Length: 443
Image 1 (cartoon, rainbow, N blue to C red):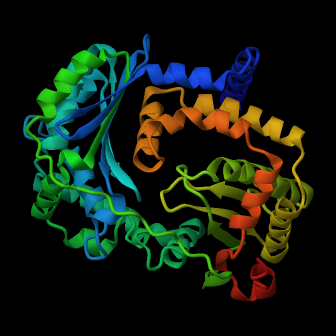
Image 2: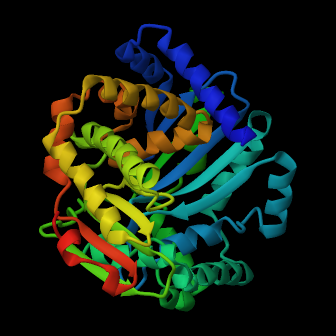
Image 3: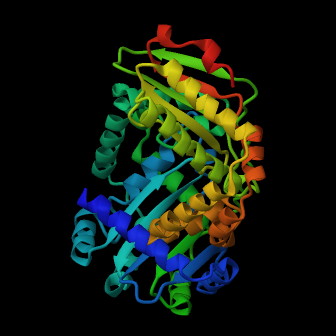
């Protein structure tokens, strides 16, 4: 509770400080843009943001493509390869790697997502030079030692085999199977237990070698660093990496042509429900209005389902941030029909009723606070810049977020509600007899 109060107080103080000055978004964005250097090294795009006075340096080496790089037969191999790579490299085998990173307070990790993958580095500023050498060697020269690979494999298999152990896990599996069927996202980055079990160290090495082409890579660094000096170091580190000829293929949209409801029978105390619908991505013109609409919807469903009727502990409405994007409403309840009916009613109100300007003003203040708190660390800023560069239409758009949110009009919220919040595809984990199709399919 004390931590929550501290965060709330910090957010309030930050909001007061920010709103005590006329909000010149364009000027603020231009100032932030001036701190960012953009250049090419051997075909690899590089972004460096200098944040003077910060004690840490964060970096991310991002790999384009995500699940589009894999097939159903090898889904999970990219996540496996990156996770095993950070276990040890040519110059820094496992024991030496752990010793050096522990001594310097350095963290190196890796992972895959639907749209891209990444090696990440967090280092103190005084130890950045040494940390950089380790980071580059791990990314470019992993050894995939059999013992390291087997340890990573067992961790991945444990996670995959336990996915359906909880109602929440079962709901997520049902959601992916239903919504992503026939789409590249169906080959999830985590893969399958069968795939992970049969992948050999030599498969990982071959896959990694194919990934390490500068045409696939994006490097982002944020911290108190000198861009000109770092540019020379990057050129030395990545000058020998093959360019390749990678060109990213467009993702198809996820179809939502008619409503549906799929129930997975499971003996649970409450029914778990998730209803998904189409949504614009961060690169789309509708995104900011949709973000505002989903924030309002989240507040409304919480008030109606939790506060007023106590039908569920945590009803929710969320907007994803993927290239082929979706949004959803979700709830766990002993009365799923009433809960879903109330949530769908709130969607209808967004479509039919105009949101007043005061409510939008409060929402803009909320975003002002949470946005700056979210980007407080250098690592968070690396992730934000990379996400916009890779799937959001370019890193400069990340600097427009608050200004675009503040410009959202009530009519735009109503428009996106009507455009996207329809033909919901519901998945349910629980008792099939407790679900009324007439309620769930009314969207």
